[in-house]
Image (cartoon, rainbow, N blue to C red):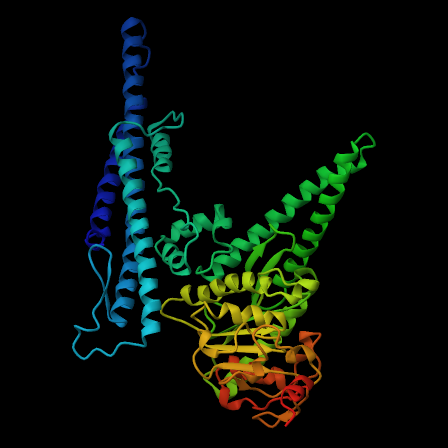
Length: 555
């Protein structure tokens, strides 16, 4: 780290200017020599020998100018990369200083709280999280620095030894153009199985040119990478959406040829039939995703995965990169991309509108982005009695939620996690790991994986439960007990009520559909919107007593 702090793009920029002047001189001299050196009407052995020498010199000059052009491109790209890298390093040093840490020259995270006069460190658990993040950032900064150093050294070595190809150029100018192409830095892949902090540091360490190149030629690297800005993920996933549709369409046509061939073997026919059915389901899901992401108003496609049996996706209504409030909703039992993403997105879009309305009326006017997260295999049958899918989904949701914060370093939004039914269990398990969530809201929950709010990395007093009348699932307590009985949880009403601005709000009932908990005009939807907008004082408190609650506590 000490060496990296000494890096400066200024020297590289000066070298770039010098190499550019040399390249221009060589092109001008070389092209002139390629034409002016010829003597009209001169023939014979001497003329042939002179022409041979001329061509040899031009060939040599082309190799030299290709090397100079490659070095110029390498130095220019390195200057841009170093500028981006130093910015990430400055951010990291700033974060360390705010939490009374220091990044030493050997990359160690040093605690300075006990030697800093007047230091008032943040809570220990928060500082521990930041220390881990700082360590992850340092690893990525060093990896990126090594990559820049290695790439530039390789270009300069090849240029010095005349190893830069001219790609068959016939002029010095063309050779320079070819050399420039060979001088580009290689694209550094994201960290393998990186944390969200590493992913975010990797992305921010790239120059704008490198980010564009990766978005254009490697969208699969970033579409589902937590910690990357939503705008970049959206662009990548829209490209991947069309690629997946085209790829699956081609495979389906090949399978159809097998199915249409009367001479196909029975085994081949059966395999084609099964695979064609799988592809049809995936194409149907992709069509649902495409229609949802193409709805009027800003939409961002933040997750796209068709590798498994059940496609996964996440779509945001609003701009996650700029919104002050970001809410992520997770559905439960029976949820599928094909059957539910459009309906969920519709309800989340209306929730966003209500949050924005409340923020405009009572808050600071901050905008909301509302995400429908369908990034796990929701149970479809008797597997709903086990929390195994919630455990797996919780790990994925935790990284997604933390990725929102990590992608907006220095401009963290107010993040709210909402889960319905089995999705509330998934959300609860995610919040044992995710540390970037400010409020948690559980709807019709059969349990959140614990009966102790201290197990969740959510600020005290910021966990809420809503239970509809006639919602039997909300009283099951299958996964950690009934959350309405957890000490410290806050109850929000789902009964008829009057909003802060005098509107009459309807009661919501039953469990089977999220339509009820998120239905516009209900007390439930209003309360969720108020919490998302950060207006807890405008919410309507109150608990609904279900049959299960009465059985457990008849008095």
